[in-house]
Image (cartoon, rainbow, N blue to C red):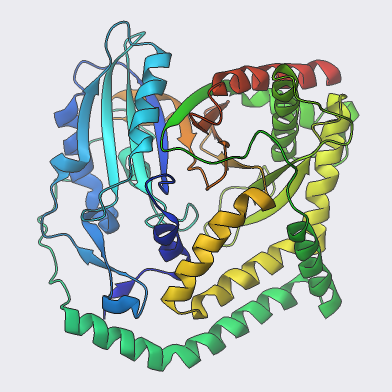
Length: 466
């Protein structure tokens, strides 16, 4: 039996076009090491790629779209195609690195090959090099799937890994086999529907004993979604070119604000992050000459962890997505944080996570053509439902290494949905929080200004509680 893409993973393929590529990325900077070159990186990945077999597979469509596409081994797999080398011209500034990332991330991945690329970027100033990774969202879900960057890094310097294992691609299913498997899946579908319904009902019951709790949560989701997002410069008609900005901050600043006397009301580090983003957007709008009256809101789509900040990361159902109205009209930074905390707490208590999980479970019923239609409809409506995406992914708070080279910084690249001017991604690592701002080059040519505003907003909030 073939391994089929899930409904959600398939939707990322259907969402994609030349204007809105659906790949995620990482920009990691390392201490310089004269022994670390393209051959070293290629060997490192070759020794570990067996732990991520998806990275030697490509997507194969089912004739007539009778079912979701399937994963098949790529008989032409060539690690040299996917792992590449680039050199920045002197002096190798961060600005040059950002331009390189923007160009690489603007290009869609080749659908005829496994959907990933990795670049060793040499010549970064201060005797550093960068590794820029690029992986299609259909390949990784960010929660349960291991990504190639995870197996490339080690907690100890100088780790090598086992010798590369011999690998031969499995046979590729024929046109007839794909059609037969799709037909067999259609016969099995009633049972799958029943299982999904049972799972969704189990999710609903886990919230509480009374159905009303879950129903009120679903109502809260619907109430938020039907209100159109505010009209802001954060939305418009996308082009195909990107701009990229980065910012490094200290994790201790966010923890300081969270635990301060003024904020003892159950705020999380993620709430502090959102308050900083709200403050930055306020300053950015004012500097562009936009009116920002006290009632001004900017709606963010926010995937957040439903575990406590101090709990270890767990695989499974630990992430929920909220629509949060950021109070950019509020000029008091402490009040902005209070309002953000109130909004995120209301989402958690309303049962929103249950509603989202139930919808995700039920989405597997629809025929592939409906997935395509729904994905493209959602893509068209996104600018009406939210203004930007803000993702905050907690990482390890200890050093990681590629060979003998220590990773110093790690910036995410979050893809833009249609109609979005910028996405804001954060990764915490080894005591710091790294912002990656992926912007439409035409809609937001001043994305570096927004990065500066983030610095100011964090400093403002720290000063207000010190």
